[in-house]
Image (tube, rainbow, N blue to C red; front, side, top):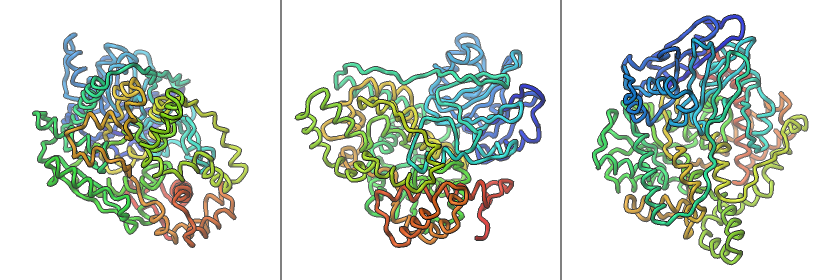
Length: 625
């Protein structure tokens, strides 16, 4: 796990000092070491967080033949690929996935190597003989890779803030408008004008001119007939394989446990593997750490479930409860979070994740790897929003009476978010949000031509290959790497995604339960009341309560709003928003809009107002109000 940077010039030379500064701005991503390759028209750099083979043998950039490479992320099946390469005559000087990737590209070519990889990664390599810089990003976009053009050169980096070393950062009004109007278009644009993301599942080669992205993977799996027991057996095998691969580490490892099915299953399968004799160099069962978050709202606090799960697995001594409340949230803390996230997050659960990572690092300074259950909902239809899509499919296939029967079984899910779901479906929240934006800003938001969703698998395919999951993965990457911790997500695995989409909807939603196939595969490994609990809480913050706790801060920001000054937000709208929060006139269904206004406002101030990006990293970013 690292921070990487690269540059190639069509004409002229790469500024050495500017490129070195790019790496310095990402020191938090790799505090263990720094390495550079520089040759006038091309540069590659790496900030290393040592996880596999932490010896000097793993230093990057790494060279072999004509290739020089830097890698951010993990190639989880590197041991299997290394053995395959050894069988055809290659030898290795390290126990790193970086050397395996480099050798795989030399032997099989870039696209064929990418098709063999299981992992989360972004990498760059320079081919000296051809004079081209190539790169790629993992299938789901778990690891970031961004690019920007400056003069006759194109620059790449793991984080946007690195580009400050070589260009002026400017706000992208279109992305701000899309964010505040709850539009989530498929786009490579970022919130910074001229800075773009390399698309997931894509690679490129360039001499400094056109990048010419090519996709190397599509989630086009077709449904097939499954015998139920065969499906359960195959899912259990594939999920266990994914967990096993994600446990590979030479440094301490921990789990984030929410109390729900996804993270609980990860821990249960890990315990099973350890009991069966699995050994990794970075941890043992005794040293395995488990963290859970307790929030100051009993209705959504899952820590009690996490305690029960840890106890049932014999890991209660490994569990640490991190208590988070609105008293932990200050202007300074929010600005610091926004600086590292770089772009405004989806909602206040990002604060939970940030505060958790901060406390984890404080209490476990040697920890470098944290595994969580992100992606399970998109993989297995866990969100409430999938229920109406499923019922519509049942109507089409089996008729209205069967759909009514299914709806009754799913009534607890339906009623839990019925009001909010109806308002979102009818566009009420979006209309309210667009009503507060200036017309000139709204004109930047293209009318959405969404993908046609016919079936549940269509919806899962869409969400797994972009949208909300991509946003969550981006936020988690930035907030964890701010504290030099790698987040691993075993559910976000293309093998599991292809297997899930090969299964019909009724294996994912069945008998009144979401994630049915996964619950069946985990049977006997977790307490029944946890495994078959229909109530879904998820990793969420008490949005309305925390918003009212910050009412004075929110009101102060709206009275002198940067969003108003820059013509994004209507002046009268800012005043009404402030008044509504002060008076407590905010329903739960609309609290998310206020949080987006708050995050966008702080983002404008941090990056284009009060913040001085030349400050040392981890410095407090606020100035006296």
